[in-house]
Length: 495
Image (tube, rainbow, N blue to C red):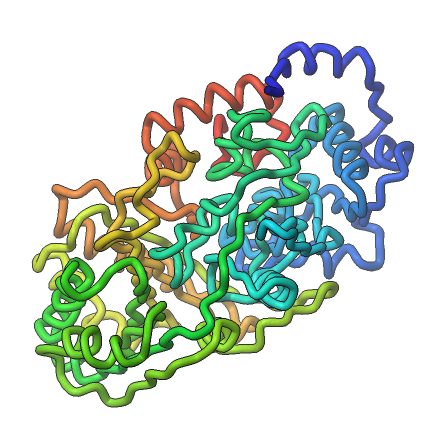
């Protein structure tokens, strides 16, 4: 078993490495491909997905080999420059731009390989985006993975911080499919982490990778893709007639979600609310006949007639395309999608009370029907009967939300990315969270790290993203393998 003799490695690091006058000198001496602020491509490369939070890196690394990554990390460490990886660049808080000015960003766009071996293990470069991942795995092997619905999101943060998809209740989170990772650590060493080799690193990377290293490749256990599954969606705008009607509808969905006589792990769904739309949609890995005769009648019981619906038997790739609401293929270079937004999340380990739901929908009717800017809430089912998300515990990985029922994403954005960001969006979105938590004080709510929230204090972030035992273990490991805080963002472990 490979082990961590890393404290001695850090002592040796200073003896064997000589920094250049600047980080740029060090990188130049090692022939590491870079973009500097003087480079013609720097402005485009530095532009974040969330335009509300622009940061200017000291340097952007454009590696094509793991040696480039290792050399870049060593140069950063010897010159006291903080480092963050960029996979797809979709960090809600722009942590993939460093989360501050003056960091080193390691852009992994060139690490875009996808191969599937005879045992169904996919080796995936960290620069791969989810749409290309799904297409690549399926075209090679007719296999699949659980993951999110946005094709442009990169695998790096998504897989290493959880990774929910509508098939996660049957297959687990994206993170749960990771059986190995290639990673560059803070001392520049390149290791392959698994349950037997560097097991502490393997544990930490699955939940807190941004604080521990630069993952260059993931090894993922794929599953046979369904030959067919049910894609379904129902719209209920009439419930906006009153808070009582909205509460009653959600309460019914919650009862349905916990009804083991009707649903099992094979169904996944989310509820969408935005001030005009109130809809529920999902997938079912079963037959259309069973869905129509058993599941749909119970789902729709007591509800007003839907204004429209879409229920169909589809293949795997079609189901992903429907969820994405766009083609899955994304460009391998020059990705240029952006938004201008603020978001918060809420993880609910318990069923939501009538008081909490009434407070929530009162707030939406009072403030969200004529909102300051576009917004939406997506409320995804994580728990319920036989959910494979919740069968793990904190010894399995550093991901803590293993007793969740619902995960809320509250998201407010400008109508156009060229518009000024209204000051009213942030308090409106925060009010959505507060409406629920203030009315259910007996519950300890959490937050989801892939919807990272820059408005949280450091203490709030650590408490909401990790349970105490998990954070304490992560902190001890961080102090061992990255005592210089090379891998840093404003909410990193040990900050």
